Length: 145
Ligand code: DQA
Image (tube, rainbow, N blue to C red; front, side):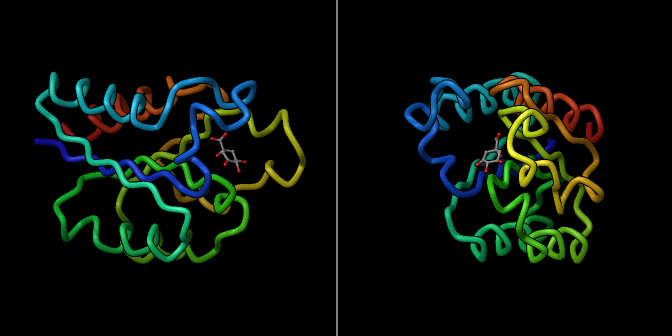
């Protein structure tokens, strides 16, 4: 069974009410519920974790292999653009991961144009809204059957 950990970083707990013109109206619970049912229908398993704290995301990345996950889907929020520590965690444990951004970060402020994570990611999906998580899940399920 393919096991995928879905990590969401700061402020993504507010999806649904946070800047709906940019991030849409679906809540994180809506998104995770959909991912869980897609994975279940394919004989896989999805576990979601959200934190506003950088160290909690790092601890999840460090423990992912030990906890039996095959891959990670991550929307690190603003930590994408700032966190060398999250990048180092991925480099340290070398678990495959897929980077997702709901909005098209390249059409926004220049400080959102750089990601510390992308160079290590198996794939990056930006600007497709919550569908991006589903496409990342599809990629992860195909890569880790
Ligand atoms: C985001 C884009 C980031 O720049 C921003 O800080 C977020 C959300 C996105 O999903 O589009 O929190 O990762």
